[in-house]
Image 1: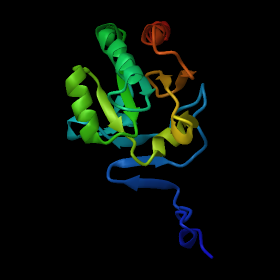
Image 2: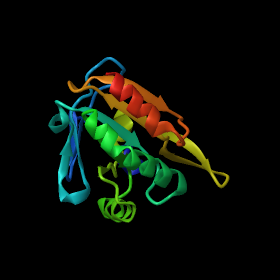
Image 3: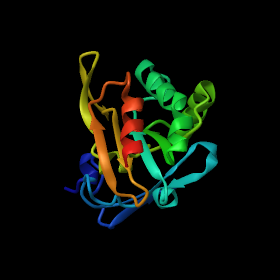
Length: 181
């Protein structure tokens, strides 16, 4: 009996996956000190955001669980408050979650975030960065994004990662690390 007939998706055999603007080359998880493979995701503003287009600038990729939740709102606000300092340091900020672009558009407009939010609805990039974790939500185990941030240098090399982070003060810590690159 095939995986699909058992209710599981069939294994993909292609070396990359692309769905409606979402691509990520299949390789192992990202590693500090190594180049992050190119990927693209749908972005607020109706564009497709591509990692390769960010080359030449330092980049902060922050993964967050869900739009319009207290922790995610606080995290986004802290990055937004420091956005002028990130910009002066030559750093681009991008937020990523599994929410839809429509949800991201509302969240970004409501919070006046000056950076793009990317939709990874099928978790291709989340899996690449190994941020999907089992969580306990109201006594139920669910798979969701573990709040994580990644700092890439201007050549696309992963220089620093933060996992299982506390939101308060985190954006400033990331800024200081980016300024030190």
